[in-house]
Length: 239
Length: 188
Image 1: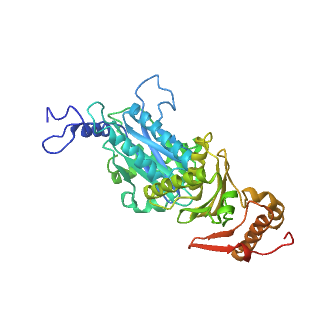
Image 2: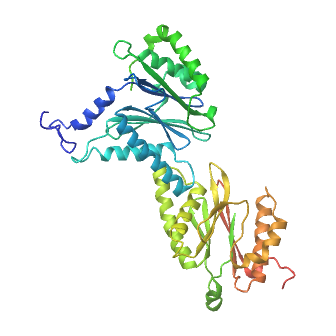
Image 3: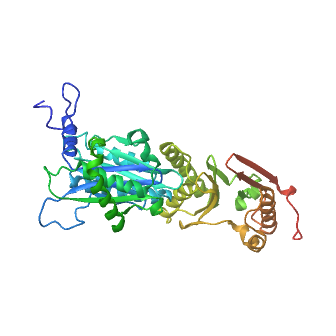
């Protein structure tokens, strides 16, 4: 493995592309990003670690808006994620210009995944060191959730991944659960302070992706802090 | 609901053939051509291919607005070279039946009812007076046939055969009415 991992255009003898695997490690080492698809929308939550005393609240956002109806939460190298958010925005914008309507989430996810995949094919570039979750809500197609990883695969979210009762809950209830999960997985020993970034898109926002309002966020964090200890045994890992 | 007469100004009046100006661009979407028919045909064929590819990629039939937008992009981006306009109409599962107009320069708007072509100038009054929303299929066919008959009667470069298409969720129905079978009014 010493000499097969220097470029994305080289396979190892056992058929692995190490550069892509190393890119996925960058995601594993990042702090948690989570998104839950519920009955009437999608809620995003990100554990944003505060690494500097000069940190300003609300800066270095890890949740992006891609067009009005699509949200994107990222994990991994933030600079790579920012450049991909621009790619996603251009795809959504040119789709709207060509076809006159909102880009369907599956198509957006496939297009960005294809772009990410292209960077795993050549030695002149390196793969993107980030994974991201795309979510949207539409009156006709309902809430949808997709995830793209550094290898360029677009995964769709199916209900089997979430706990069964969550798919019957509304966005307002799920916001509290997302906050609780982030609080539980946050390791106070390893990382000190963090800011919780929360956003949602659903019937509650009329299909627009927005950051959660201050009062809803405060209520969610209050719930998270009280339930953190009691429910921590049910949570398994992060993305 | 799409309708059209079948002449292309002087040429076909001399040679006596009829031209189909209502083209199916997808299963439930039709486009009526206007302007230079050569340009309109070329644009329609390009749009038909584009839409077919788009719908395979999306794994779902295209929206009517998508079809109209594809035509619009072609008309707008090539406005210096083209003289073609379209009325695109059809049915999709999101918004049901819709009518869109793409004008010569590439403006795209949605309307409940619209008319175009040289003969249309004679029937603005008729359409404005007689159109009402939520007509039944029969009322609509009668309204459209009358409008066409009046236009074809007055406009010397319109005539031939009246071609109507009825598009619904369940299917497509073509109605062809030869000129002599059209309703007669007092202008003849």
